[in-house]
Every structure is written in structure tokens, then in C-alpha cells.
Amino acid sequence: MTEDAGSATTHDVVGVGLGPFNLGLAALLDGTDAVDVDAVFLERDEEFQWHEGMLLEGTTLEVPFLADLVTLADPTNPHSYLNYLRETGRIYEFYFYETFQTPRREYNDYLQWVSERLDATRFAREVTEIRWDDDAAEYVVAARRPGTDERFEYRGENLALGVGSRPQIPDHLQGHPEDDVFHTSQYRHRRERVLDADSVTVVGSGQSASEVFEDLLERQATHDYRLDWLTRSDGFFPMEYSKLGLQHFTPEYERYVYDLPQAVKDDLVPSQDRLYKGVDPDTSAAIYDLLYRRSIGDRDPDVGLFAMTEVCDIADVGDAYALDCRQWQAEESFVHEAEVVVLGTGYERPTPSFLDPLADAIRWDDRGRFAVTEDHRLDVDHAGDVFLQNAELHTHGVGVPDLGLGAYRNSKFVNRLAGREVLPDDEDTVFQDFSVDRFVERAPGASRDGSETTPRTNDHRP
Image (cartoon, rainbow, N blue to C red; front, side, top):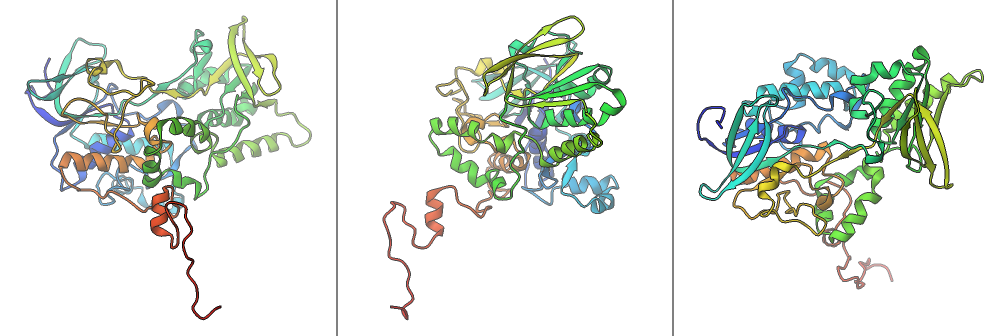
């Protein structure tokens, strides 16, 4: 095995995976003058692509453009979204665009722009194994070029794991031709097949499912297919977008969640699905408006929406697929047929097999999940740090996958690599308090133990 430069270089940090979070770490390390860290970031794909199968026309990010790779940690960083607009000659166009939300296609173009500017990125490097070298006290990362026998070896004092998630299709819905039954992540690549079908069913109630449904609804009049949308959720409800509700995606709330007992956290995250699941209100409104216009004059838009419905099985019945459905609230079963089924069944994050050589050194919780420090590092019995990117939902709560907290987490990693505070550790960023201790500090007359205190009075009143 050889390293790219043909040397035995030991990097300060080796990044595995190049999604937005590790790319953000690379951008902060590169664009912060006070940092001198030798880093390399490895990515399996030939080039940067972010959810390529869902880069639909008209879709936007669900966070403001300030949640780019660097701005919330370092607004002066040259790899910011605003500098991307400046360098690509689009800053005035964006100025008159007058919206905080970034088109998803442009966000992907921005990420590609950053990845091409960084010397630390290495594409076509699929990591196959990571082990610890006791003698050198460093991590050894083995990689290969996909589809070839070319091998590489990288060494690093620390690691940054940002391998991302992968589409999840439940076992009972698998085993069918990929052109007919597939995950929403593949929708744009298979859309022409979908448009040729006589009937299409979308399964799921998240943002991806809603965007696929809206796209198909817009094209239905031209292609004349039956369109249905099924979800096991209570309804087609919107995500939480109120300003006070969004304060759950803040450093304060993350710290509050980390300090909760693990059993409380395990119950908490599933109960907060309105914070990270559901439909963007604008998407919901667009779908309703389309249905309203299609129904003018007592017309039937040939569309069905059915909630509280679980798809228990899919069977091939010749020229279509039979979906074995159960309306769980009414406890009624029925069969629904469709020629094409698009599954918005979410994503999963399995522990990558390349960590197997480190398994005995990694600390796990009683459910086989990573044990994680408050500053987002893997609890591991080695001197080198392992920084975690979006693998700690169970310890830090719903904000972990949020793009707006990526720069905050990466600022912690940058400071640790630099050995000093180079980027600010943001505190007091919200108007509400989650921790009782913090509230007591801020609120006159409040008592930590719950006892009453003497209220303040006006001396001129009886």
C-alpha cells in the first residue's frame, strides 16, 4: 500500500467520508488562518455529490443559507456560501432572490465548489479497514480505488468519521426490480420509468416523500397516471418551523440533552418527530393548491392520500404490485395495487465494518451504540481522537443531523486539533432555557431546590 504522496506521512487527522459535515471540517481547517493542521479527507465516490437522486427543480434546503459549511463558526472564512456567490458571479442575483433558503441544486453546486478548492480532499478512496498502530501511536487507514486493485494507506493521529447514512428499505419490502420498487434517493435517476407507468404509489410522510409526490403531481396531467400517497404516520403533518420551536437546534439544547439519563433520551427523540420528520409547510401548501386547482369544476384529480396506513408486504401480481396494507387505527386491512412504488422509508446508519479492528477499544452502550463524549468524540481506548459526524443522535438529540449545527460541532474539533480556542464555543444563543440551573442563574427570585424565595417588593407599597 502507498500513500498518495508516496511517503509515510502521518497526518494530524484523517477524515473518512466527505458529506457536508466532514467537508465543513476540511473547509474550516483550510480557511482559518490561525490553524496549522495537516489533514486529509477520503471519499469513496469519484466526485462530490449530495443526495443527487433528490436534486429536484424547485426544492430548497430547510435551513437558511447561513447554515453553510463555515459561516456560523467563522463568517470570514473564504469557503462560505456568500463567497461562493461572489466568486461565481451570482451575488447580485441572490441579493434580488430575497430568500434565506438555498435551492438544493445550488447547495450541491456550492459543496462541489468547496471540495474542488481544498487540497485535503481525496476522491475514489474507499476505506476498507482502520486499525491502531501501538508502536507509532496512530491510526492506520487502508483504502482502495473502487473497481481496481489499487491500494492506499494513510496514517493519522486522529480520525474524523463522516461516512453518512444509507437508504433504508425494510426487509419485507425488498426483493423487487429496482426500476419498479425503489427508494426516494433514486427518484431522479428513475423518473422516466415512473412517468411511463399507469399507476404510482409513494410510501412515507417525510420531506423526501412529499417532494416526490409534489413532482409527480405536477407532471400527472401530462403523463396521465393514477397517483397515491400512503403513510403510517397519523397524517401528512408539517415539520416544526416556528422560531421558538427551532431553538431545539441550538448548542444549548444539545448540551441539555446530553446531560439527561440515557433512558430519557431514548424516549425523547422518537417523541420529537415533528422537529425532524414531516413535510415542509411550503411543500404542503403547494400540494394542496395543486389538488385544489385540479378539482375545479367537480373534476377528479385521480389522486389518493391515505394516512395511518402501514405497508406490510409487497407482492408481484404480473403487471403491477399488490401492497398489503393495514390501517392501524381502525384495524382494517386492504390491498392496494400500483405499477411503480417509491419508498420514502428513511435512512439508517449502521456501524461501518472498517471499524471492526477497533471494536475492542471502542466503548459501547448497553444497546450496542457508540459511547460518546460531550464534545462529540468517540469514547475509545486509544490516545488519538475519533471525531463523530452525525453518529450521535442517541446521545446529543435531534440537532445532530441539522446542517445548522455542523459548524458548531466542527469548531470543537478544530479547537481540539489546534490545542487552543481558535473558533468561538458559542453559548447563550437562545431566548429560552432548557436547563434548570441556567434558568435559576438568569431569573431573579428563582430557587434551584424549589423553595420559595422572598419576592421583590416596592418599599412605597404596603
